[in-house]
Image 1 (spheres, rainbow, N blue to C red):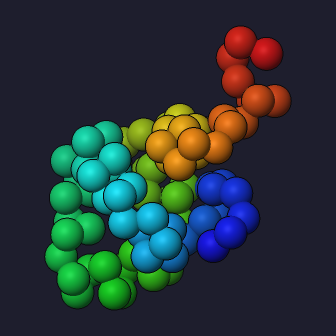
Image 2: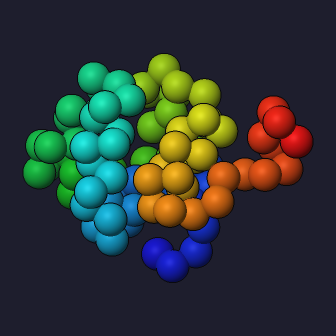
Length: 84
């Protein structure tokens, strides 16, 4: 997954390439503790997108995308940023 993190990014692929994001996600919502379960990680996380994960975690999709991008040292969604 060399492309940008966006609402359609698959959680499983993201965590495969950036395992450090697991703790970032868990820090955002207790719901994400389930990602530690290897069975869930191999099944649900493979098909779940960032947008779906945001809904599960009770987060705004764009906030989750921004947080994940910042955790990776990538720029946020400038055009959608409230300060723009």
